[in-house]
Image 1 (tube, one colour):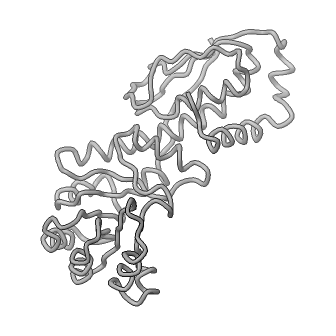
Image 2 (image 1 turned 45 degrees about the vertical axis):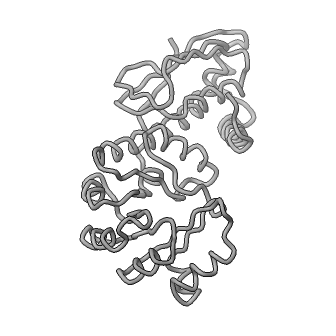
Image 3 (image 1 turned 90 degrees about the vertical axis):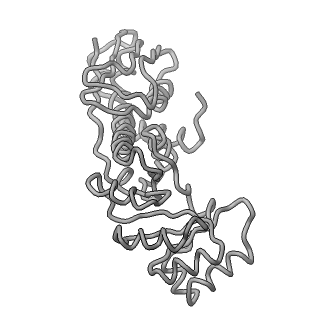
Length: 277
């Protein structure tokens, strides 16, 4: 298991934040040599994500701990099923419990909600995408969790795709001037996506040869019109106020992608617990 420096730093920060100068309760009760076994279980139906991060938490605390995987990221688990077991010093088990669960619950919550959106559009060609609406420092992990839930990643940051939004268009004096500026400096390996707010802008963007047109906060009827205008010349992404109740209606318009901010910024934490057996 190889973690990025960003993830390793995040784990260390989380442990330092929680343990501080020491776990005074555990250290007062248990001898340093006392051993134990912990079991991590699902308390709800979920899609698992973050198990490698949970393992890394305990390895950072005490490399002598023995971690046994019973599941893998991306698995669909039911209430009561075991996810992993850890054996070793009791103090280390208790010190890592909350940090481990914080990562697991948050990331599995994202994977679980993503899977619900993916299931909701099954049978259409629309792929569910995430956004940049992530917790600072957690973007890498949250985007992995989206993939574990069956979703796909949008751009990682401002550096890996050209995305002309409404404020770019306003500042540039129109959609075509903004596109022309990008094309004059475009790196060949980066996609060009542009937000269009009207049928006229959709037509202009498609004719200008962009890769993707973003249709933000449009009705399903407006999006169907955009699909007809584009006629396969580029791909289309729908976004804005997507919910489990309406996402299939948008998927059935014929768009290629649907981006959903809620899968990262509003996913409920999955119910997972750890017990000392």
